[in-house]
Length: 450
Ligand code: SF4
Image (cartoon, rainbow, N blue to C red; front, side):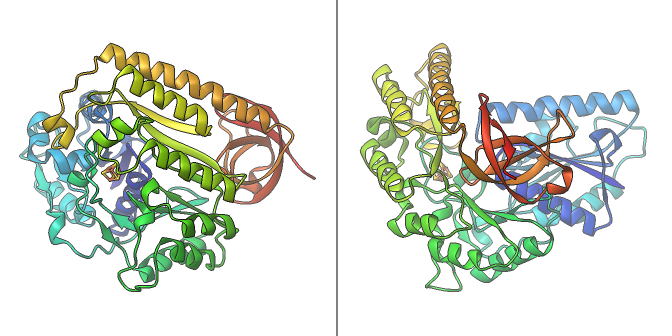
C-alpha cells in the first residue's frame, strides 16, 4: 500500500506532513511518486488565505477525475487547518470524495483511522460517491501534552522541530487560534531529543517552529526561555545552522537579539511579521505593536547585527485601510529594506474578529492595485540589495541540486538569500564559501572560493 501527501501552507504544515509520512511508514505504507500510484492521498491544507482553501476543492475535483480516468479509488484524507475548521461540512461539500477528515491535533490517529476506513470501503469499482466519511476533529483545549510521534523528514539537509503549537494572540484577521488551538509549549527535553535525532540522521540545519516562536518558555525548565533554548540547541553536535519562524516583534527582546548576534550557528536572518505600516491599522488588527515600535526594533536589531537580513508578512486591504494607511505600509517597506516579503490581499477568515465585526470594505480592485504597488516596490528594494551583494562572499549551506542543470547547486546564506553556483552533487549538505557574481530578481549566482 502506498501513500501520497500534498502539502499547502507554512513550515508547520510541511512538518505535520513529515509526521504523517513517518506514522504511515511505521504502519507499513510506502511513499508513492504521485497521487496516481497512491492508495491513500492526504491533502494537508492551509486556511490562512482564502485562495489556499479554494485550492483544496479544486484538487479534490482533480483527484476525482484522475480516479475516473484511471479506474482508481484512493482513500482521500483531508488534514490540516481547513479540516479542523470545516469538519463535517467538508465531507458534505466534497460530495463524497473525502473519506477522512483529520484535525490538526489528531495527526497521530491517521494510520489507525485510514486502516479502519479502508477496511469499511465499498467494493472496488464503486467509485464516487463513497460511504460516509470519517471525522477526527479534536478539542485542542483538552490535550495538554502532545508527543509528536515519528517523523519522516522530507528534506535531506533541513529539519523542522515544533517547539510551540497554537496561539493565544487572536490577531483580528487570523484563523490560527481557531484551527490550531491555544498555545502549548513542548518540553525542552523533547525538543532537544528531536534536534539530536535530526543531527544523527544527517540534517545540518534545524528550524524551530512556533506561531510565536519567541514566546517559548519550557514547561520542564523555568530557566529556559527562547534565547536559552537557542543556546541549548547551539550545543547539539552535528547541527551547523539554526533558524526559527516566526518571531513576534513584541517578544523580540534584547536577549534574543544578543543571542542571534552571538550564537554562531544561529542564522543572521529574522522573519519579523509587520502586517501593516500604519499604527491605526495595526491597532485594528490587534497586533499590539505600533509602526514606531517596529521601526525602533528594526533599528536596534540592525545596530546589534549589521549583516542581518529581514523579511516580513504584509496584508493589504484590511478593513478600514485607507490610501494613507497603505502609503505608510509602502514607506515602512522601503525604510526597512526587507530581503523578502510575503504579501497577501485581505480575505475574511471564519470566526475571526475581523470577519465578525469589520466590514470587508476595501474593494477587490483596490486590494489588487495595492498589492501590485507593494510587490513592485519590493522587487526594486530586493533588486538593489542583491546588486549590492555582488562581490561579497558568504558561507552557503548547499540544500539542493538545481532543476535547470545537474552541475548547478543551490543553497542559502545565513541571511537566507538563495544562491545558485556550479558544484558537484556530493556537496549537498555541506557549507561552502561562495562569492556573488550576478543578481537575479529572487536569487543570486556565484562561484565557490577556492
Ligand atoms: S500572532 Fe496573530 S497572526 Fe500570528 S498566529 Fe497568532 S493570531 Fe495568528
